[in-house]
Length: 338
Ligand SMILES: [Zn+2]
Ligand SMILES: [Zn+2]
Image 1: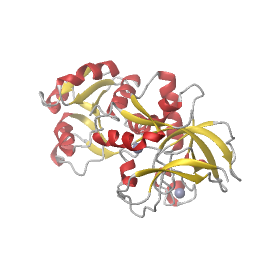
Image 2: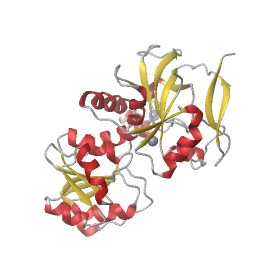
Image 3: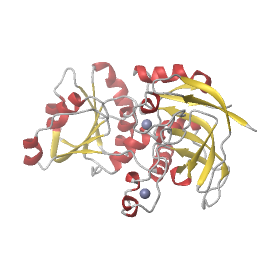
Image 4: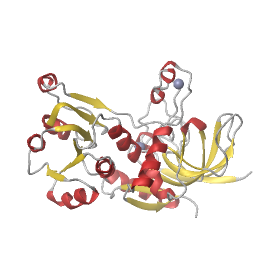
C-alpha cells in the first residue's frame, strides 16, 4: 500500500511526530489533496495542546493548506483532479441544517474543522469534504497562498463585511500575523488606514504595508489619536490583548464598530459610549471556502502578500515552536515535497 509522511500529535501536549501512514482514499463527497504548503497558525495549538472539546488522537494539525486535487471521491460535482485548491479552518458544512439553510454556513451544526475534527495539512496528503475547497489562482505560489487561507481570510473577510466605505477611517490594532495582512487589505480596499501597535520601531513597516497614519500605543493614547482623525468607523482588533482592545474602544466614531478577530479572553467596554454613539463591539468568524476563494483571488490580483518564514515538513517541531514564540515575522509556513 502506498504511504505518505505526516506530522501527527498522539496525545494532548504530545510532540509533533513524523510518521508513515497509508494514503487515505476519499469517500463520497470528499476529495484528496496533495499538499504543497501548509501554514502554521496559533489555532493549531488547540490540536497540539488538546484544548478543543472532543478531540480524537492521533491528529494531524494544519488548516492553512495549499495543494492540488489528486483524487475526487464519488458524488463531487464541480471539482477535478489537477485543480489547485486551498483548505482552511472551515472544514466543510452540510448544506441542510437550519444555520446552513439560513446561509450561515460557518455555523453549520455538522460543520467540520480542518486539522481538528479531521486530519489537516501537516503532511503529504489530506482528504477534505468538497464544501471545504477554495479554488486557487494558477499563478499564486503555494507558500504565498497558505497563510491567506486563515490569517488572510480572517482579515479580508472581516473588513469587507465591516460596513466601512472607501475613505472611512479604519484602524488595525496589532501588526502581527493577522495585522500585517489587515493593514494591506484595508489600504487596498480604499479605507483611510491607521496602524496601531506598540513601539515606534513598527512605524516604517506599518507605512510600507499601506498605513497612512501610525499610532504608537505606548507613547500615545490611541483612542484620543483616533478621535483627532474624526474617530474610526471600524477598528479591526487583531491583537489578542483585551487590554489593548479596551484602550482603543473610545476612538470609535458615531456608528463605529470594534470588530474583533483576536481571541482575547475578555475586554472592558463602556456601555455608555456604545449607547451614546450607537457604537458596537462585534466578533467576526473567519469565513467559509468561498470567502477563502475570494481572498486568494483578491490578494493575487491586488498584490497583498503575507510575510512568511518557510520550513520544510521535516522541521515541523522547530517551525511550530517558532510560531508559538510570537517572534516569527510574520507567518510560519511548512513546504511539503519538492
Ligand atoms: Zn488559523
Ligand atoms: Zn449545516
